[in-house]
Length: 299
Length: 254
Image (cartoon, rainbow over all chains, first blue to last red; front, side):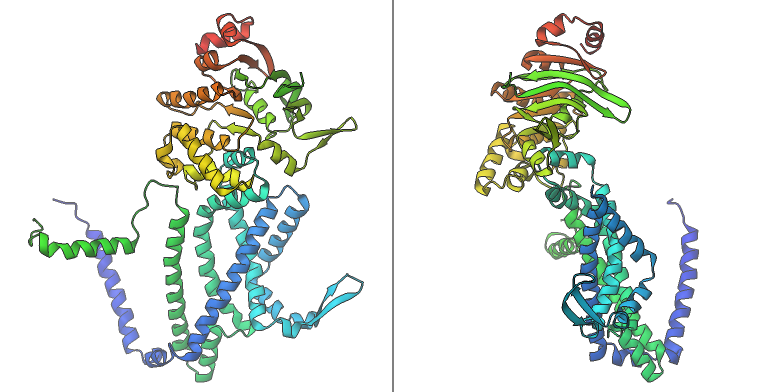
């Protein structure tokens, strides 16, 4: 007799009841306004909002990653000015709320109406108006990207520190200089440690981009909030926004799976097949069954 | 005297208060194979790492092929060398580590070809041909596309030797190259090293393989507590050690 698991049946029953209650409410409660969601979820302003969300996430993440790698290498530099500057940057941008940082970039023109480049206290060469330079997109990217750089620097630093010291020595003994050593030997190996938290960061960034409401950048949350205010129907529009965020984060998870596999090369004897490979294999087996085997699975 | 490949004059090395090398003086002639023997903590690995400036020496003079290691003498004072120059000199010295330290994200072939292309910027076709030849020479022509973790310890160490040779060094340093290997894999690595010695490569080998030292070595240096206790022709030192410390050590490893 196999071991019985009564606890599993109890848990299943409890969860089924709870799920049924939820479904019942979702079906019978008219205030969900499913019709509003259905007619708006693929409407042009919402789709534009989705595209804008992806755009600001991608650019901010790119800024964050580049800045993070730079800061991490600076932090580990033997040059005390470099490591000190990186420390100060990380201290400031991790120590203040990203919400305030975003607001700050939005109102930068109040502090600095014109942005001038030149010698401090001396002649200035370039004058730019902050209002034309810092558009909502630029403010959003500055706010999110500069903040992300500080966090990402610590992730990259952890990755670099995870690489065996023998790798540094082997590369040095071959005459590699610090830049080559970092770029060709250390960072590719650090990636294995860096990629999983990077997936986390992109996921976070995607959702944190909803704070761009405060800089008037028309991403998904801005569009949804506006529609909610216009129609006095906040619930369906917020649910709609959540649906889109879920779709986007799910796609990201799939992408992360494949990136992790790429950087796992050389780390295990054979990688397990991807879901797609497994599906394809199953399909080919299925197709073969009717011709080669009978119902009992025997040839 | 100036034609020695490696010349050490009263080399001292300290970590904080701990003095690891207490005045090492020795010479390695071109094409000579010098075996460094001694208990752990005697400073033999540290000395090897000083030779290619992975460690800075605190005092004394250390020359490789007539050039000071890591420093330049101008107007009677020593000036620390710029990273660029330190790295250029390192390209002329190959090093093989106890733990192989192959680059795990690269295949055997890429491990061998990486440094000549990235550091010396040699033409691609030339490097590829040489990498192929070197892997054949260490008996791994069938493993070119294998990643390090798909290779046995002995195979990894042979790739590591090929990787060091790809830079066409004039001096090879071996830091306990067989200590991390299963006993039955030791032979294949020693065979490669023996062949290299016969081709006239200058080598400094830190090892516990007395047999190798006796058969391949031209000189044997016994170190203990940061000093050279005794040195000479391997057969003589092994058969007839002069110092008590050497006798005690050899009686345990033989």
